[in-house]
Image (cartoon, rainbow, N blue to C red; front, side, top):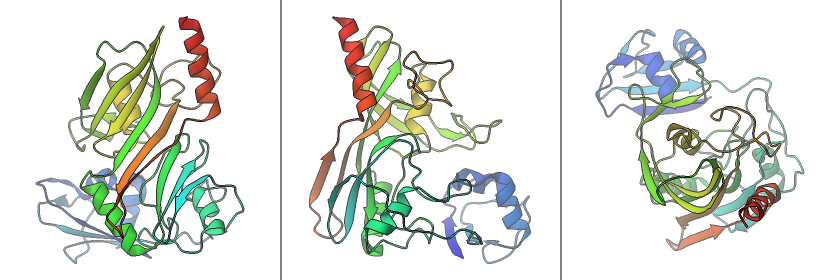
Length: 305
Protein backbone atom coordinates (compact mmCIF):
# COMPACT_ATOMS: atom_id res chain seq x y z
CA UNK A 1 0.00 0.00 0.00
CA UNK A 2 1.01 3.61 -0.62
CA UNK A 3 0.90 5.87 2.43
CA UNK A 4 0.02 9.54 2.05
CA UNK A 5 0.67 11.88 4.97
CA UNK A 6 -0.91 15.31 5.34
CA UNK A 7 -0.15 17.85 8.06
CA UNK A 8 -3.00 20.36 8.44
CA UNK A 9 -1.36 23.75 8.87
CA UNK A 10 -4.44 25.96 8.53
CA UNK A 11 -7.65 26.28 10.51
CA UNK A 12 -9.99 24.25 8.30
CA UNK A 13 -13.01 23.19 10.41
CA UNK A 14 -14.53 21.17 7.58
CA UNK A 15 -15.55 17.54 7.16
CA UNK A 16 -12.72 15.07 6.72
CA UNK A 17 -14.04 13.57 3.48
CA UNK A 18 -14.54 17.03 1.98
CA UNK A 19 -11.09 18.19 3.08
CA UNK A 20 -9.41 15.11 1.60
CA UNK A 21 -11.31 15.42 -1.69
CA UNK A 22 -9.82 18.92 -1.95
CA UNK A 23 -6.31 17.72 -1.10
CA UNK A 24 -6.39 14.52 -3.16
CA UNK A 25 -7.87 15.83 -6.40
CA UNK A 26 -7.46 12.53 -8.29
CA UNK A 27 -9.88 10.77 -5.97
CA UNK A 28 -13.63 11.09 -5.82
CA UNK A 29 -15.33 11.98 -2.56
CA UNK A 30 -17.13 8.63 -2.72
CA UNK A 31 -13.82 6.76 -2.91
CA UNK A 32 -12.38 8.78 -0.02
CA UNK A 33 -15.50 8.06 2.05
CA UNK A 34 -14.96 4.35 1.35
CA UNK A 35 -11.35 4.57 2.52
CA UNK A 36 -12.50 6.20 5.78
CA UNK A 37 -15.18 3.55 6.31
CA UNK A 38 -12.62 0.77 5.73
CA UNK A 39 -10.28 2.24 8.36
CA UNK A 40 -7.59 3.24 5.86
CA UNK A 41 -7.59 6.87 7.05
CA UNK A 42 -6.13 7.84 10.42
CA UNK A 43 -6.27 11.23 12.09
CA UNK A 44 -3.67 11.65 14.82
CA UNK A 45 -3.27 7.87 14.85
CA UNK A 46 -6.97 7.11 15.35
CA UNK A 47 -9.80 6.00 13.05
CA UNK A 48 -12.21 8.93 12.59
CA UNK A 49 -15.77 9.17 11.35
CA UNK A 50 -16.39 10.68 7.89
CA UNK A 51 -18.08 13.66 9.54
CA UNK A 52 -15.00 14.44 11.65
CA UNK A 53 -14.12 18.13 11.40
CA UNK A 54 -10.50 18.72 10.43
CA UNK A 55 -8.59 21.10 12.70
CA UNK A 56 -5.26 22.90 12.54
CA UNK A 57 -2.47 20.60 13.71
CA UNK A 58 -4.19 17.35 12.68
CA UNK A 59 -1.91 14.71 11.17
CA UNK A 60 -3.74 12.65 8.55
CA UNK A 61 -2.51 9.34 7.12
CA UNK A 62 -4.18 7.77 4.10
CA UNK A 63 -3.40 4.21 3.05
CA UNK A 64 -4.03 3.62 -0.64
CA UNK A 65 -4.54 -0.03 -1.56
CA UNK A 66 -2.81 -0.96 -4.77
CA UNK A 67 -5.20 -1.77 -7.63
CA UNK A 68 -5.39 -5.56 -7.59
CA UNK A 69 -5.72 -5.98 -11.34
CA UNK A 70 -3.30 -3.23 -12.34
CA UNK A 71 0.12 -4.40 -13.46
CA UNK A 72 2.56 -1.93 -14.90
CA UNK A 73 3.80 -3.26 -18.21
CA UNK A 74 6.77 -1.65 -20.00
CA UNK A 75 5.69 -0.68 -23.50
CA UNK A 76 7.85 0.23 -26.46
CA UNK A 77 6.21 3.58 -27.09
CA UNK A 78 8.44 6.19 -28.78
CA UNK A 79 9.45 9.06 -26.49
CA UNK A 80 10.85 12.46 -27.39
CA UNK A 81 13.55 12.64 -24.71
CA UNK A 82 15.05 16.14 -24.68
CA UNK A 83 17.68 15.51 -21.99
CA UNK A 84 18.70 12.90 -19.44
CA UNK A 85 21.45 12.09 -16.98
CA UNK A 86 21.71 9.89 -13.88
CA UNK A 87 19.19 12.00 -11.93
CA UNK A 88 16.65 13.57 -14.26
CA UNK A 89 14.99 13.11 -17.61
CA UNK A 90 13.15 15.77 -19.62
CA UNK A 91 10.52 14.50 -22.01
CA UNK A 92 8.37 16.29 -24.57
CA UNK A 93 5.00 14.62 -23.94
CA UNK A 94 2.66 14.45 -26.93
CA UNK A 95 -0.96 15.45 -26.54
CA UNK A 96 -3.28 12.47 -26.14
CA UNK A 97 -0.92 10.63 -23.80
CA UNK A 98 -1.96 10.06 -20.18
CA UNK A 99 0.93 10.54 -17.74
CA UNK A 100 0.34 7.54 -15.46
CA UNK A 101 -1.99 4.51 -15.30
CA UNK A 102 -5.38 4.92 -13.65
CA UNK A 103 -8.78 3.26 -13.94
CA UNK A 104 -9.68 3.42 -17.62
CA UNK A 105 -6.10 4.00 -18.74
CA UNK A 106 -3.98 0.99 -17.91
CA UNK A 107 -1.67 1.13 -20.92
CA UNK A 108 -0.14 3.50 -23.47
CA UNK A 109 0.76 5.97 -20.72
CA UNK A 110 3.97 7.91 -20.27
CA UNK A 111 4.86 5.66 -17.32
CA UNK A 112 4.50 2.53 -19.48
CA UNK A 113 6.90 4.09 -21.99
CA UNK A 114 9.35 5.22 -19.29
CA UNK A 115 9.50 1.72 -17.82
CA UNK A 116 10.61 0.43 -21.23
CA UNK A 117 13.15 3.13 -22.05
CA UNK A 118 14.59 4.02 -18.62
CA UNK A 119 16.36 1.66 -16.20
CA UNK A 120 15.91 3.65 -12.99
CA UNK A 121 12.94 5.72 -11.81
CA UNK A 122 12.12 7.20 -8.41
CA UNK A 123 9.63 5.42 -6.16
CA UNK A 124 8.48 8.40 -4.07
CA UNK A 125 5.04 8.57 -5.71
CA UNK A 126 4.33 4.85 -5.45
CA UNK A 127 4.38 1.98 -7.90
CA UNK A 128 1.88 3.40 -10.39
CA UNK A 129 3.64 6.79 -10.73
CA UNK A 130 7.38 5.96 -10.82
CA UNK A 131 9.50 9.01 -11.62
CA UNK A 132 6.54 11.37 -11.96
CA UNK A 133 7.34 14.68 -10.22
CA UNK A 134 4.53 16.74 -11.78
CA UNK A 135 1.92 16.15 -14.44
CA UNK A 136 0.38 17.49 -17.61
CA UNK A 137 -3.22 16.92 -18.64
CA UNK A 138 -3.75 14.17 -21.20
CA UNK A 139 -4.32 16.62 -24.05
CA UNK A 140 -1.66 19.13 -23.04
CA UNK A 141 1.64 18.65 -24.84
CA UNK A 142 5.11 19.69 -23.78
CA UNK A 143 7.90 19.44 -21.24
CA UNK A 144 7.82 17.26 -18.15
CA UNK A 145 10.48 16.44 -15.51
CA UNK A 146 11.04 12.80 -14.57
CA UNK A 147 13.14 11.85 -11.52
CA UNK A 148 15.43 8.83 -11.79
CA UNK A 149 16.02 8.39 -8.06
CA UNK A 150 14.27 9.28 -4.80
CA UNK A 151 16.75 11.97 -3.73
CA UNK A 152 16.34 13.84 -7.01
CA UNK A 153 12.56 13.46 -6.74
CA UNK A 154 12.42 14.99 -3.25
CA UNK A 155 14.66 17.92 -4.22
CA UNK A 156 12.61 18.66 -7.35
CA UNK A 157 9.35 18.36 -5.40
CA UNK A 158 10.70 20.88 -2.89
CA UNK A 159 11.54 23.28 -5.73
CA UNK A 160 7.96 22.97 -6.98
CA UNK A 161 6.69 23.68 -3.48
CA UNK A 162 8.97 26.72 -3.19
CA UNK A 163 7.84 27.90 -6.66
CA UNK A 164 11.38 27.97 -8.04
CA UNK A 165 10.56 25.75 -11.03
CA UNK A 166 9.89 27.78 -14.18
CA UNK A 167 6.86 26.48 -16.10
CA UNK A 168 5.81 28.51 -19.12
CA UNK A 169 2.99 27.49 -21.45
CA UNK A 170 1.77 28.67 -24.83
CA UNK A 171 -1.98 28.82 -25.48
CA UNK A 172 -4.39 30.10 -28.10
CA UNK A 173 -7.39 31.71 -26.44
CA UNK A 174 -10.65 33.18 -27.68
CA UNK A 175 -10.96 36.95 -27.97
CA UNK A 176 -8.51 39.81 -27.95
CA UNK A 177 -7.08 40.60 -24.53
CA UNK A 178 -7.11 44.33 -23.82
CA UNK A 179 -3.95 44.27 -21.74
CA UNK A 180 -0.61 43.03 -23.04
CA UNK A 181 0.06 41.23 -19.79
CA UNK A 182 -1.54 40.50 -16.45
CA UNK A 183 -1.76 38.32 -13.37
CA UNK A 184 -4.79 36.20 -12.49
CA UNK A 185 -4.93 35.63 -8.74
CA UNK A 186 -8.07 33.57 -8.12
CA UNK A 187 -8.39 30.47 -5.90
CA UNK A 188 -9.23 27.14 -7.52
CA UNK A 189 -11.13 24.20 -6.07
CA UNK A 190 -13.27 21.35 -7.23
CA UNK A 191 -16.49 22.46 -8.91
CA UNK A 192 -19.32 22.33 -6.33
CA UNK A 193 -21.68 20.52 -8.72
CA UNK A 194 -19.57 18.81 -11.39
CA UNK A 195 -16.85 17.10 -9.33
CA UNK A 196 -14.80 16.22 -12.41
CA UNK A 197 -14.22 19.91 -13.13
CA UNK A 198 -12.27 22.59 -11.31
CA UNK A 199 -13.50 26.16 -10.82
CA UNK A 200 -12.63 29.53 -9.34
CA UNK A 201 -14.36 29.38 -5.97
CA UNK A 202 -13.69 31.08 -2.65
CA UNK A 203 -14.58 28.20 -0.34
CA UNK A 204 -12.81 24.84 -0.19
CA UNK A 205 -10.17 26.09 -2.61
CA UNK A 206 -6.44 26.80 -2.84
CA UNK A 207 -4.44 29.82 -3.90
CA UNK A 208 -3.84 29.88 -7.65
CA UNK A 209 -1.76 32.46 -9.52
CA UNK A 210 -1.20 32.59 -13.29
CA UNK A 211 0.81 35.28 -15.07
CA UNK A 212 0.14 35.82 -18.77
CA UNK A 213 1.60 37.83 -21.64
CA UNK A 214 0.11 38.36 -25.10
CA UNK A 215 2.49 37.15 -27.83
CA UNK A 216 0.31 37.88 -30.86
CA UNK A 217 -3.19 39.19 -31.53
CA UNK A 218 -5.44 37.94 -34.30
CA UNK A 219 -9.03 38.62 -35.25
CA UNK A 220 -11.09 36.94 -32.49
CA UNK A 221 -8.06 35.18 -30.96
CA UNK A 222 -4.91 35.82 -28.91
CA UNK A 223 -1.73 33.77 -28.64
CA UNK A 224 -0.49 33.98 -25.06
CA UNK A 225 2.34 32.83 -22.85
CA UNK A 226 1.21 31.72 -19.39
CA UNK A 227 3.51 31.16 -16.41
CA UNK A 228 2.50 29.14 -13.37
CA UNK A 229 3.20 30.56 -9.91
CA UNK A 230 1.18 27.70 -8.41
CA UNK A 231 0.30 24.30 -9.82
CA UNK A 232 -3.40 23.59 -9.41
CA UNK A 233 -5.28 21.04 -11.51
CA UNK A 234 -6.33 22.60 -14.86
CA UNK A 235 -5.05 25.95 -13.58
CA UNK A 236 -4.41 27.78 -16.85
CA UNK A 237 -7.55 26.35 -18.44
CA UNK A 238 -9.71 27.43 -15.49
CA UNK A 239 -8.12 30.87 -15.15
CA UNK A 240 -8.42 31.79 -18.83
CA UNK A 241 -12.06 30.71 -18.85
CA UNK A 242 -12.59 32.75 -15.66
CA UNK A 243 -11.50 35.97 -17.44
CA UNK A 244 -13.72 35.06 -20.43
CA UNK A 245 -10.86 34.03 -22.72
CA UNK A 246 -11.06 30.23 -22.68
CA UNK A 247 -8.49 28.11 -24.49
CA UNK A 248 -9.45 27.16 -28.03
CA UNK A 249 -10.48 23.52 -28.29
CA UNK A 250 -10.89 22.98 -24.55
CA UNK A 251 -13.67 20.39 -24.29
CA UNK A 252 -14.38 21.16 -20.62
CA UNK A 253 -13.99 24.90 -20.04
CA UNK A 254 -14.80 26.33 -23.47
CA UNK A 255 -18.39 26.44 -24.74
CA UNK A 256 -19.27 25.68 -28.34
CA UNK A 257 -17.34 24.13 -31.22
CA UNK A 258 -14.17 25.72 -32.56
CA UNK A 259 -13.62 26.54 -36.23
CA UNK A 260 -10.44 24.49 -36.58
CA UNK A 261 -11.91 21.01 -36.22
CA UNK A 262 -9.85 20.15 -33.14
CA UNK A 263 -11.20 18.37 -30.07
CA UNK A 264 -8.41 19.16 -27.59
CA UNK A 265 -7.12 22.34 -26.00
CA UNK A 266 -4.38 24.32 -27.74
CA UNK A 267 -2.14 24.38 -24.67
CA UNK A 268 1.55 23.50 -24.76
CA UNK A 269 4.17 23.39 -21.97
CA UNK A 270 6.85 25.28 -23.85
CA UNK A 271 9.55 26.14 -21.29
CA UNK A 272 10.79 24.33 -18.19
CA UNK A 273 13.53 25.57 -15.87
CA UNK A 274 14.85 24.16 -12.57
CA UNK A 275 17.97 23.72 -10.47
CA UNK A 276 19.65 20.38 -11.04
CA UNK A 277 19.09 18.22 -7.92
CA UNK A 278 22.72 17.08 -7.78
CA UNK A 279 24.82 19.99 -9.08
CA UNK A 280 22.55 22.94 -8.24
CA UNK A 281 23.08 24.27 -11.76
CA UNK A 282 20.10 26.09 -13.29
CA UNK A 283 18.85 24.31 -16.41
CA UNK A 284 16.21 25.49 -18.86
CA UNK A 285 14.63 23.74 -21.82
CA UNK A 286 12.26 24.88 -24.56
CA UNK A 287 10.28 23.04 -27.24
CA UNK A 288 7.98 24.40 -29.91
CA UNK A 289 4.30 23.35 -29.99
CA UNK A 290 3.12 20.39 -32.07
CA UNK A 291 2.54 20.68 -35.81
CA UNK A 292 -1.24 21.14 -35.69
CA UNK A 293 -0.86 23.99 -33.17
CA UNK A 294 1.72 25.73 -35.37
CA UNK A 295 -0.43 25.25 -38.48
CA UNK A 296 -3.39 26.99 -36.82
CA UNK A 297 -1.18 29.91 -35.75
CA UNK A 298 0.19 30.22 -39.27
CA UNK A 299 -3.36 30.19 -40.67
CA UNK A 300 -4.34 33.03 -38.33
CA UNK A 301 -1.23 34.99 -39.34
CA UNK A 302 -2.19 34.72 -42.99
CA UNK A 303 -5.70 35.96 -42.21
CA UNK A 304 -4.19 38.98 -40.45
CA UNK A 305 -2.21 40.07 -43.50
